[in-house]
Amino acid sequence: MCGINGIVKLDKNKVSEKEISLMNKEIQYRGPDDQGIFTHEGVGFGHVRLSIIDLSSKGHQPMEYAHQNRKIEIVFNGEIYNFQKIKGELQGKGYVFNSTSDTEVLGAAYLEFGFDCVKKFNGMFAFVIYDRRKNILFGARDRFGKKPLKYYLDKDKFIFSSELKAILTQGVKREVDFEAINDYLTLQYVPAPRTGFRNIFKLPHASYFTLDLSSRKMEIKKYWNLDYSKKLKLPESELIEKIEEKFEESVKRRMIADVEIGAFLSGGVDSSAIVAFASKFKKQLKTFTIKFNEKDFDESEFAKKVAKRYGTDHREFLVEPADMKSIIKKLIRQYEEPYADSSQLPTYILAQKTSAFVTVALNGDGGDENFGGYDKYEKHLAIPFLKMMPCKKVLAAKLFQISKQKESFLLYKIALFVELLDEAPVRQHFNFTHYFDIFYKNDFYKNEYQKRFEKIQYDSFDKFKKEGEFKGLDQILYLDFNTYVPDDLMVKVDIATMANGLESRSPILDYEFVELCAQIRINQKIDIFGRRKKIFKKMLEKYLDKDILYRKKKGFSVPIKYWFRNELKDELEEAIFDKKGLVLKMMKEEKIKELFDSHQNGQNHSKKLWSLMSLNLWHREYFLNK
Image: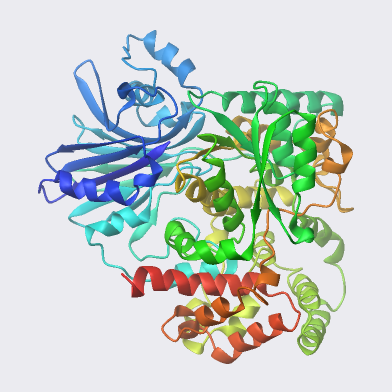
C-alpha cells in the first residue's frame, strides 16, 4: 500500500528528480517506509511505500521489470491477493522473479497478457506502467475504486498521482468546477470523473487508460461490469452454503501480510461477520471500535460482545466534539475534493488510533450494497404498489405546503417520495439519496445557478441506466456500485487510513463475492416489511447472536446534529456565512439563514449544514489560502 506519482512531458522536455520529489513529499504519509524516483527523458515516476508484502529492498518502487528484451517501469499502489497463483502461471511461461512482491508479478502479467492483465487481478490497485518499446503509458484502477488515481492532461504534459494535492505542486491552475459542485450538493461527494477542480480528473473504477506519448492521444476503457441479469435457482440451504464458502475465501485472501493484521469492529452485522470469519485464521485478532457519549449513536457495547465471543484483543476509542474541532481543517485538506460524508470523522480517528497497533485493518464495507441493507432500498420496493395512487401530484403539492408551514422534514420526505413516484428509478434514487434534492436546489439557488444546472441535474446517474438489462431494485444496487461505492465509500476509507499509514482491506467487496451476490434474487435479500440482508443474516446465525443480527441498523454516523447546536455552532455559523465562500455565491443568504435557524430550533438539517460547511472550508483551503 503506497502512493504513486508521475509526470510525462509530451513536449519532449526532461522531467527532473526535483519535480517528482516535490510530489512524493506531498503524500509522504501514504508511504512512510521508503520512497523512490525514476526518470527517463520526458517520463518521471515517484513512489512512497508502506511495506506490507516483501518488506525487503527488493520491493522498492518504481520497479523495473524486463523479459525477452522488453522492459517496463511500474508504480503500483494496492494489493493483488491472487498474485501467487498468477506468478505460478507466469513461471510456467518462463518468467523469472527476484522478489516475493506482487508488484513484480503485476509487471510480468502486463508483458504476457497486455491490457487484459487487469481482468486477472483480484485485489485493490491503482498502477501506471511505462512501456518503453511501445512508448505508451498504461494505467488502471480496481473494480470498485478502492485505490485512487487522479490526473491532469494538457497539450504539453500529463501528471498523475494517488492524490490531487500532489498534482497541484506542479503549478496546475486552480479553477472551481461548478458542475461538480452541483453534484456534490446532492450526493455529498463528487462522482467520477470530476474532482471539483476543472481539468483535474479521476480515472473511473474498473477502467484503464492508455496514453500514446507520440500522438498524445489518451483513451479510457471500462474492463469489467457487474451483471445482475442471471439469477441462481438453488434451495436456500445450498445458497447459504455457497455464500458462506465464498465469504470465507474472501476473508482468507485478505489475511496474507508480512505485518500485523487487525479489524475495525463497529458492532454492526458486517464488521462483526468479518471478525467472526477472520478469527478462524488468526487467534486473538486485534479489534478496534469507536464509541460516543451520545447513546443514540453508540454501538460499542455490541462491539464488545462480539469481541468477547471471539476472544479478540479489543480496544475502544472515544470520539467527542473536541476531536472534530481539532482535526476539521486537516480533514478538509486530506479529502481534497468537496466531501461531506460525516462518518469521515470517526473513520479518520479510528484509523489514526488503530495505526498505533497494526499496519493492516479489515473492514465491513459493502454488506449493505450487496444485500440491501439501507432503508432507501425499501422505498423502491414500495413504489410499484403506490404508483397507481390517484392525484399524486395534488397530494405531493399539499404535503410540500404543510411541511413548509410546520417546518417538518419528515413530511417533506414523504412529499418528495410521492412527487417522484412516476420518475425513472435512477432519478428517484438520485433524490432519495439527496442532501439537496432538485426541489431544494430550485428554492435555494440564485437565478443564474438555477438556469446553469437545470438541464444537467441527472447526468451523473443517467449514464448508468440499465432498464433494459436489470429489473427493479437490481438497477439501484447496480447504480450504488457504480457511484456511491467507488466515489464515497472507498474515498472515505482510503483517505482516512492512508493519511495515517494504515492499509484497509474490504473482504465483502471481493469482486468474486460481489458477483455471487448479484446472482441472488432480491426477495432473498430484502422485503417491503423492513427485513433486510435476509440471506446473509441467515448464514451468520451460527456465528453471531440475534441481537447483533436483528437489531435496528444505526450505521457508522456521528451525533453532528447535536454538536451543531452546541459545541460546533459557532464554527458552523462562521463557515457557512463566509462572504468569500461558494455557499453565498451560489445560494440565497435568506435561505441559508432559514436552514440554520430551523436546525437550532429542533429540526435536523445537519447533513445539509455539514455539506455547506465542508464546501466553504474546502474552497477556503484550496482556493483562498493557496
